[in-house]
Image (cartoon, rainbow over all chains, first blue to last red):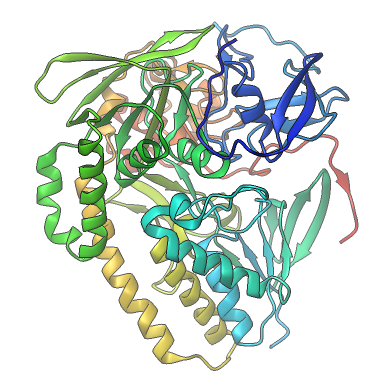
Length: 102
Length: 458
């Protein structure tokens, strides 16, 4: 899948291996989870209130539109958490499913 | 009272200069910051291992960024610096903090809020589509991560940041599809006398625009945004707008950076009970302070964009000035020359701020023109029509009441990106000036907390 974000510089960093929704992906050291996911895909998560996909909005920890989860259920803001080797991320909300709005 | 417990919230330009000034007077503050590294948003530092130099990262502001970072590096060991820590609530004399899943409290005698700002947003049909980012967010992507938010990016909105970020994208090699400014050229010309208060900065702005024209980027002034086009599965596909000449224009793009200058993060001051004031020039509420940064609550101070949007340079001056005000209140000796210097610099910046507000006005009329189907609350997908119905059918002409009925402002961003536009929609529907519909009250926790947060003793 085409990535949403485009790397423009700083591409000589060491690689980091993590798992996203069960599949291994490669990112660069210092990447936020958001950059790791969006350089390889076009969204981070499913909106709880409509059929839309979401890919974050503010990148400064204010909008809360970039939530992802660790396999153990810890919620992370993808814009403000960096990748680590072995991190196991899921992009669907583990706690509950919500009826769509409208 | 040299042992007063002084806590600064925010390690951007205001917070760092405040800490520096206090330390020079022998007071060792606690500096709490939500970010992992100092610098705030504007002078945000790139992660370790990144190698771009200051000029590449901060352009014309490189020297200021370096100076602020170096000042902080000198301070760091001498103050009680607590990064990666969110102040999520406060009671008189005590802050509630969360850091890495742990809750703790911090007592204070004096509190200085340097909480900064976020982008100020006006909704547009389709802005909930993946690939729409705030203008500040687009800048962080580039500055902090060396990425572009898309393969082909439209910059839309108004204000100096629009041109700054677009030109930074061009310089970094990103494809900029268009720069679309809702403000017409005529307003910029009218604002010239005020903007000339800072000729250097005005010149920087003109240079940015020239760079965009030289790079053959399409720049449209006086546009009316119509729609972010695209679909739920793939996100943004382009932007449709009415050009200054009245024609409808479509631009293909897979990303949009959207923003209308900034709004202050006032929640903590609000929770502390500080009086808020409506600023006519920018048409928004902020913390009421005296010229030095004293709020209406004794012992609570504010500086930088978190109290009054004047930009990073003013934040540095205001940070020093608020520290001097606190020293004065603690009956400590104060360097009158240093104080006068800050006040004089801020007077010039106030003048420039009024010029910016005139040149790049908040587009309140767009709220009135929003189609009923347009989403106002991105968090919970609540439309302008639903919000208007709470005004018409339930008579909710006050922001907090309309929030209770419609949930606009109740989602996970807690109104940061919808409540100002929501207030405009309500005011337009009720036929009253926007300051009469009130403002959304700050609520604790000021950002969502995990239920797993553990209590630790302080």
